[in-house]
Amino acid sequence: MRIAAVGDVHLGTDSRGLFRPALGDLGRRADVLLLAGDLTRCGTVEEARVVGEEFGDLGVPVVAVLGNHDHHNDEPDRVAEVLRDHGLVVLEGDAVVIETGGASLGVAGTIGFGGGFAGRSGSAFGERAMREFIGRTTDLADSLRISLSRLDTDVKVALTHYSPTPDTLRGEPREIYPFLGSYLLAEAIDDAGADLAVHGHAHAGAEHGATPGGIRVRNVAQPVIRSAYALYRIDARAHTAPGHSITGLSGGKCP
Image (tube, rainbow, N blue to C red; front, side, top):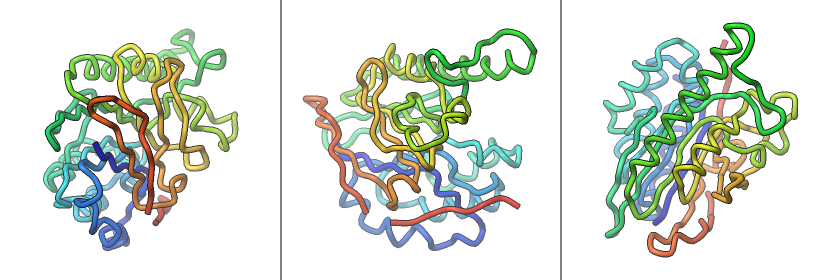
């Protein structure tokens, strides 16, 4: 099974035509495209339309989660609606099953959230704001665990924006690790089982990592993979490790 993935493309209203040319051969190279959040620059409906135009109707299913940038304008539901209008599947605490090449692929997705990692993490104690912060991560990790557990497919993939492991944050300042991911996401993935976990968000991080349970994690933030997408191959029968090949592009800032 050939899984293409990219995140953190940060498309603005001036980005029309930026990605589309690099995706022309996607249907011949991949069975699905996963988008790991931060698809827009500032989370506006107008930017979402650009994303839909760039990633819609590619000849393969496109499955996405939103990222923090896609929430910035406080319209994540409208952003998701626009993407769905262009044929993209947008997940948040749910999953989708794709049949391809005689095998089934299940993708469970959530944006995820921060909080940190084992030994250096926040807890749901003290001020209400802190309890709400960690509570959000807990709720989203639980939704990922449930949606992954319900999948009965040949291959299972966890798709998030925030990272489930510090492995793929190497290169980022350690001070910001708690804002880039949470060990609770890894616990959910290990508990439910998956063949691959894909995330974005960490622009200066590393591509390769693993959960404590040994599930492979890939950071597909576009500034990390430095390509229009990364391509991973999973043997649907043997559940072997993803292999990887690549092809090139980038993002922007909010006012």
